[in-house]
Figure 1 (cartoon, one colour):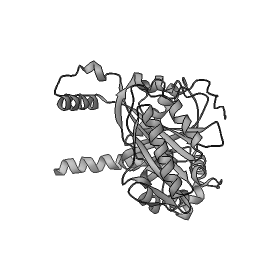
Figure 2 (cartoon, rainbow, N blue to C red):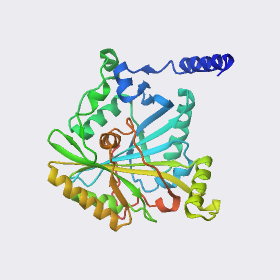
Figure 3 (tube, rainbow, N blue to C red):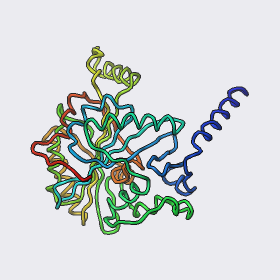
Figure 4 (cartoon, rainbow, N blue to C red):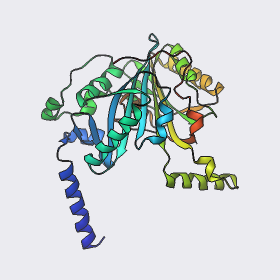
Length: 326
């Protein structure tokens, strides 16, 4: 990089800092642990590598969500907590965007919100609301949170949100609770929702997340070349024109190591009958769990490319109840 290029890069970074000056910087400990740089109290979080997220509470049916996927500019994460004693599930949706300035990302989120409202009810959460919900998803208790006092105290938000997690290669433990974080390695020709709601019958707490992203043109071309190289034949570009990238994680929590083995075996068996190949997130158990409970604050994903028609009924369930909470 020559002198002119270095000066241009320095000027660009300075302009970005000015453009993002309205945001509140996170304490240093939080930057180090969560990679959270700054945030808008209204509800937008800005992380390293120019990753931005906005979290929403979802109400109403989710079954039309997949039909709007191709119109979104942002990636979406749908997060649910399956409780054995509760039929309805609390659902949240996270938009993820990438950009150097808040202004461009805010406009992108605003456009995507209008698209989403055509298929599902959403309510944006403020930073205070989002942090309270993330804490209660695993801890169970409600906890007061104020972004103003948080910034003044210079606390580590990671320590405030998450308990101490001990992980092995294929499982985790939190005090007297045991569990495993799993991911879907391969999907059937049709992704159906009933197989996931059946997991509520296992009698343990399960966190379930779906992350979906439209394939970019360069990703489609790279994927097409990979298929042709692997199978030694040509694939028509039309075969992947309607493709999307999807990542499905689930983390379950139970009360003993023996129960963990039984539940994990049952989950793998149930999903394999419907054509899913599921495995533990080997070597990434803590990250997998945190991704599932944090609504996108911590991100872990294993994208697989599948056809859009395969996921048209991903959130469709016969005789499903409306999730009217707002």
